[in-house]
Length: 126
Image (cartoon, rainbow, N blue to C red; front, side, top):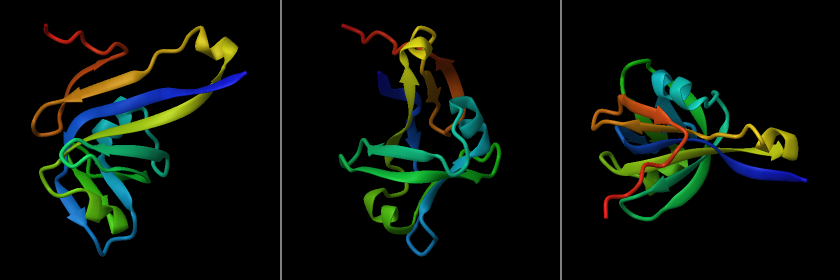
């Protein structure tokens, strides 16, 4: 059996640009792509915390160290500059791979700089 699980996510990144006339995709700072193990042209799912929109596109490289999160093309209608997003990538694993499975969870600051990378979702304060 194979299962599809969360491979990695960029948690609560902020949109820095929204380019309707640009060819579709999402440009992401290369530092963030590296931290989350997301490759250029890899399918990503985007969840907009501000408006509830959920959509799929693919990642492209943004300038390293820029903090760039640019939602482009038709997807620009689903996210505005300043919106908070969760960007997720998924992969399919077989039962043997699942024994070693850990997602890569990337948490950022208000400028989309990596604060923490881990495999566990932090416990919520009661």
